[in-house]
Amino acid sequence: MLEALIREHGIDWGRVSAFHMDEYLGLAEDARQRFGAWLSGALFDQLPFAEVHILSAGDDPSQSADRYAQKLSEAPIDLVCLGVGINGHLAFNDPPADFHDAASVKIVPLDEICRQQQVSDGCFSTLEEVPRSALTLTIPRLLAAHRIYCCVLGPQKRKAVVRMLEGPIGADCPATALRLHPHCVLYLDPDAAPNGMTTSREYRNAMVSSLGNARE
Image 1 (tube, rainbow, N blue to C red):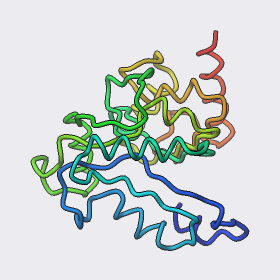
Image 2 (tube, one colour; image 1 turned 90 degrees about the vertical axis):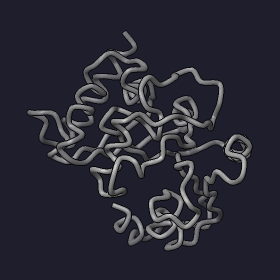
Image 3 (spheres, helix red, strand yellow; image 1 turned 30 degrees about the vertical axis):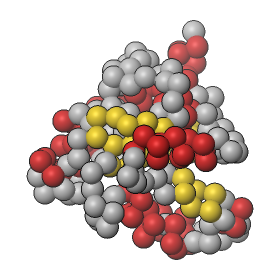
Image 4 (cartoon, helix red, strand yellow; image 1 turned 45 degrees about the vertical axis):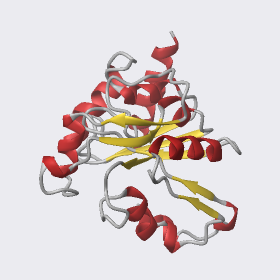
């Protein structure tokens, strides 16, 4: 998807300021697993963005979170592109997630399901190597964006997708918060889609239907 985005014509990247949603704590600055490093190589360094703001723990993660939150508050966020974790997390908001968090960016613990996913995805060799905490944008900060585009790939995410669309909205499945957003579009590949959902129209209708149910 990122390769297709880079090839897309007609986008004035000089008008785009980029942020990212989360970052591990406790990794070396040059660690390949750092999301800032990966995004820089895969996207940020490939295009002429007006600004790129890398989330980094620095010497004081709490102060770094506050500075990043201040930078985020300087202008409205037009869109967020995100995925969903096996445990239903958004960014690094593992369950139970706070849907009314007063913070915009904060330090969070990572649960074992989340950490094991990083091993299963090939980012780390063993569970012991995966950091136990991270910086993340909070649920309210993500939902403050004007539009949200959620992309979920792979059969390992199917249960999380079903919970996101059909389960009760609440802290136990953070991704259900997307049903509270008026302009969220969900993209699923066939492996991640619940049984019987086969077209993009059906995927979109499922999200719209879920949003309607949330308001009733």
